[in-house]
Length: 193
Image (tube, rainbow, N blue to C red):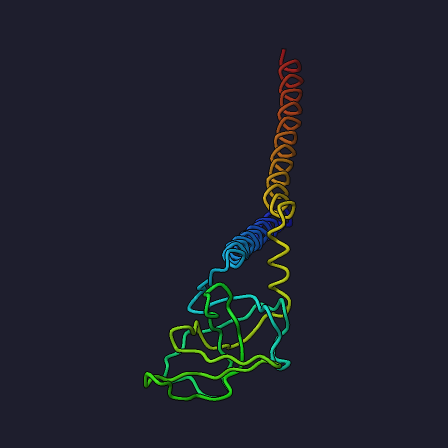
């Protein structure tokens, strides 16, 4: 009875380990995809939220290198005091600042005056990528680090090497079992003669 329970516990442990490994691999794949997109100055849309790395700090809300989580917002939802992420005029950098005021421009459309420290911007709705909803401290810096070629090689090679070593170990164990089985069968055959 004890042997049966041990086998069941071992089976459960293997299932749990497989699930944990699968989740880790999935997490690494997601992080790698996000990191690659962010390195190309693309906005990654993940489960309805957009992710970007803070390039400047803002009113003690986040720091340079934090991973910012933003969500699309309708124009009517944006108000003074909101923190928004918007593209600068050249569309080559995403900036995240606090909206200080909302004004009506000469064209009759809303414009958002943002400030951060000593910088001030007038932003149109077409430049806005979304509204800040949260951050993950320093994860942006970690993602930038993941893009180091040596880190990518390690992320890919280490699991492959571990898998090869585990398979090799299993094959050796099977060989040992087969040799023992053959010796035992030979002894039994010799006794029967």
